[in-house]
Figure (tube, one colour):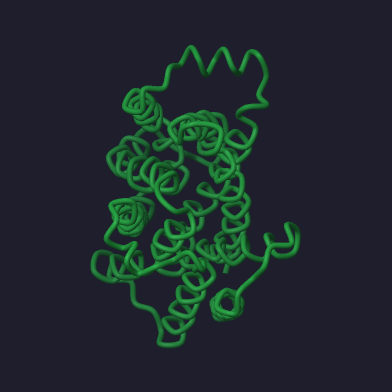
Length: 286
C-alpha cells in the first residue's frame, strides 16, 4: 500500500510539472529545462539517497541502468514534449503504462490478479482518453513529430521496467544517487546538441530568473515526482506504479477545467472518470 500511495503522490507532482513545462517551452529550449532538472536532481536526490542508506557499491551497480533511465525516461521525454502538436504529443506519451505493463510481464515476470489487470487497463484507457484533444487526427500519425513521442512512450515503459530490476537488487535510494550523477554528462551533451550556451544561461540567471521561472519550478516538480516514482518501486510492481503516476493527465485536465476555466469534452470527462475509478480500484486492492 505504501508504494501505491507514493505513486499517487508522484502523479500530483507530475501534473503540475507538465503544466509548467508546457509554458516553459514557449520561452526556452527543452535542453535548458532538462539542465535545471539535472541541477535539482543533484541537490535533492543525492542527499536523500545518502540519508536513506545509499552505498558506493549499490550506486556502482545502478550506474548503467541510471544512464538508460536518464536518456530514455528523462531527456527523451523533455525533447518529445517540445515536438509537434502538444495535444497529440501528450496523447502518445500518455500510453507509456501500456508498455510498462508489457515489458514488466516479459522481462520481470510480474503477475497481477485479474481484478488488478482490469483496474490497470481501466486506468490506462482513462488516461489516454483524458489526453485526447479535438485537434487529434489519425492522419497526424504519419508525421515524424508523432514518431518521437511514440518512441518516448515505449522508452519510458522499457526504462521503468529495467529500473525496477536494479532497484529490487539494490534500492531506490542507490538509484536516485546514480541517476543524479549520470544526468550531469547527459544534460551537458543535450545542451551541446541543441547549441545552447552555458554563458547565456548563466548571464540570464544573474539578471534574474523571470525568463526561466516555469522551467525551474517545473523541473523541481519533475525531480520530486520522478523521485517518488522510483521510491514506489521499492514497495510495489512497476506495472502498478506506472499507471498510477500516469493519472497526472486527468489531474491536469481537472486543473485546466476548475482553475483555468477551459472547456472539457465528453470524451475527456469519460477519461477522467475511468482513470480515477481505475486508480481508486488499485488503491483499494493494494
